[in-house]
Amino acid sequence: MSEAECAAYDAPYPTLAYRAATQAFPERVPEHPGDDGVSASREAAAFWRERWQGRSMMVIGAQDPVFTPAVMARLRARIRDCAPPMVIAEGGHFVQEHGARIATEALRQLS
Image (cartoon, rainbow, N blue to C red; front, side):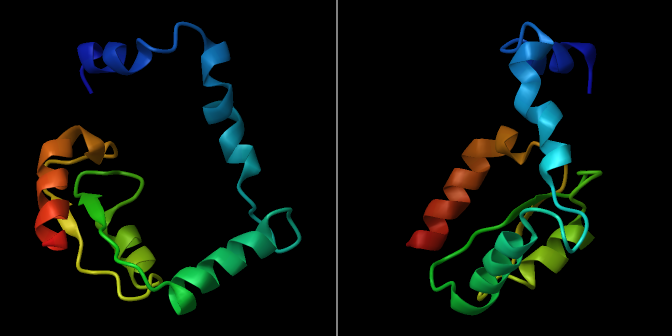
């Protein structure tokens, strides 16, 4: 990202105190079978795989270095009846930046 883009993301958070949640989050993700939260995560995965009955829309930023299209394909396979994803070729991690395109597609899918 450019310096201007970084500054725009930083603007609402004038000090690190405003980023406490994002700093703590990685420590909250269970890594080992005995960690807190593992059973809740497994139950959530079973729900999405076996009991989910709603509609789903997945949007993938093809340039996302973390949630790559391959990672998202594995996630999609675990969501019952998840439609093929909308892929934004130039999209990165923050696909919400393409909100108008995403909203238009969501409305199209609903009609």
